[in-house]
Image 1 (cartoon, rainbow, N blue to C red):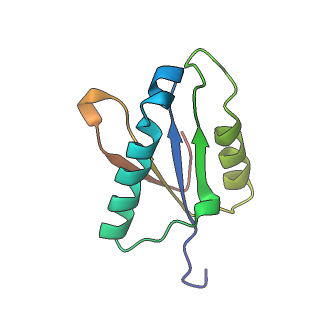
Image 2 (spheres, rainbow, N blue to C red; image 1 turned 45 degrees about the vertical axis):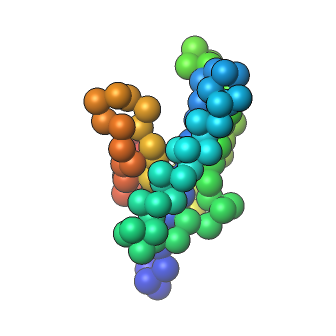
Length: 98
């Protein structure tokens, strides 16, 4: 690797109400703040966003694109904002999307 790390982020809301309340904006804000704190730059083309797709859906377009890009090694690091109350923080994953 040439020292350049390609960082991606993923944000999602599962209802139209959450989309209307701009919860994706707050997720992106938290992820970007964490990236800035860690001196990491996220290219906007690697911000994958799915808005208003229910958790019962099995297909989220941005997540599929993210997985495709990981599969062909376009992404080195991944950041997401957890929406679970017990871990309401930005998480990082290196290498593999679980």
